[in-house]
Amino acid sequence: MSSNTTQTESGELNHIIAEARQDRERQEKTYRGRALKMFPKICGRCGREFSGKRVRELTVHHKDHNHDNNPPDGSNWELLCLYCHDNEHSRDQVAEWYDETTPDAGQELKSDNKPFANLADLLKDKK
Ligand SMILES: [Zn+2]
Ligand SMILES: [Zn+2]
Picture (cartoon, rainbow, N blue to C red):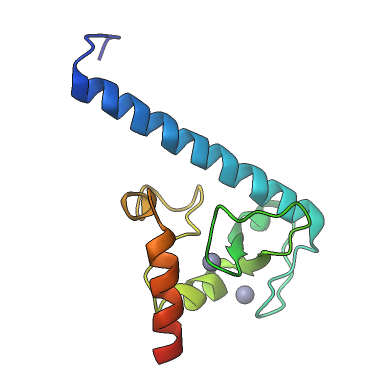
């Protein structure tokens, strides 16, 4: 693996996609950090409290399931532990909460995830 920079078109495209992903990851890291500072480190569902390393088990849930909706006052965020968050999403399979604990799963789905957010709401009604 050397830095072979032959610019094929698909190589360029991959590069763009990779950058877009990194942007998103960076963004998610940031809002997670902000949410953790803003709210008490307590799961909004089961009420467990997290501290130290265990804080990584706390994830940021978007109440409207739209990751791009990150108001500075945190009104679209909710801190949920991995288990409760998983529960919250088990109906719709939208793995929006992946973090350093979850590898790439869900990223392919996410590139344009707004339709999925709507779908999630539909599924939620049906239960
Ligand atoms: Zn919980
Ligand atoms: Zn969520």
